[in-house]
Image 1: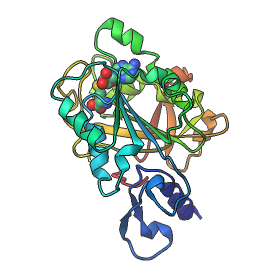
Image 2: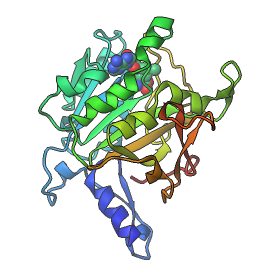
Image 3: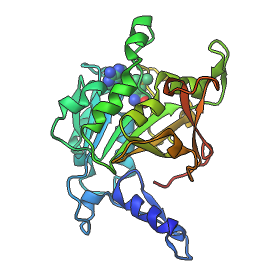
Image 4: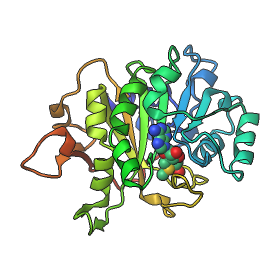
Amino acid sequence: MEPTIKKQKIEEYIGSSTICESDAKTTTTTTTTTPPPHLNTNNKKKNFKILLTAEGNFSYTKSLLDRYSHLKGFGESITATEYTKQLDASIIPVTKQLEEKGVKIMLGVDGREIGQIFKGERFNIIQCNCPFGGSSERDRDEFKTFTLEFFQSASELQKPGDRIHFALDQSKGYWKERKTFIYIERQRENPIVKGSINANYKLIRKRRFGERYPKYRHKKTYSNESFLKDTSVIREFVFEKVDHLVLLTDYDDDVSGHQIKYKDKNNKDLDNAYFFCSTDDEDSDDD
Ligand SMILES: C[S@@+](CC[C@H](N)C(=O)[O-])C[C@H]1O[C@@H](n2cnc3c(N)ncnc32)[C@H](O)[C@@H]1O
């Protein structure tokens, strides 16, 4: 039964480029590319749309387009946005190229306000990769509520079954100054457990990122440099919107191995929670 469910899910949205036929009850293992639903002439679902936020240098948008370059018109399903209102001159040729391929580029888009900015529209996938407000104390303070507000705002543009993809540095190294592991600290700065649960999203997948999008280059906020030169440390959390309240106990027997843990075992509140996934190091290329 499970393989059939998996295959149906894969066909519902993009980000799921490959179907392993062995998972789909056949004996041969072949890899085929699944077109996104709006481009699949057999699919009745129209207007499949993707919203990319906090794009920085737009190298993720470019890489996503490359990944599906064989799908005619794919660019038109994408709205790619960045928070800063002005782009560095070196990024402008990239955005021009993307626009030529049909991508809608928008600047000055605050991820906390997308519900208002795109009011009345629906996006099947909303993506946010490594958001960060800046290093000053003031910037960090202001950024504290970003993830919570982002999930709430995104949920205004989605229906059950739609997805939020959220990528974060999940390095396993120990951060001496902060006396914790980097992957936990990044989830503290971007509280995706609390954000997703409050907005009725359930974590359904956690996967590698850098290898999946080879042309993606991480960009620092307010600088053209990369903070993460080795993008293999990034993991993409895939959340699905559900039509009911998500409970912490929903993760207790999660078959995918997604668990909620607490930085302080004596303080089990959501501010203290992070995802730990047994699939962390799998190089899954499926949905
Ligand atoms: C570390 S950079 C990452 C950029 C790009 N996503 C990447 O992965 O290379 C953080 C990004 O978050 C953006 N950002 C900061 N505050 C934001 C906000 N309120 N809404 C949307 N994006 C924001 C910054 O402008 C910057 O592009």
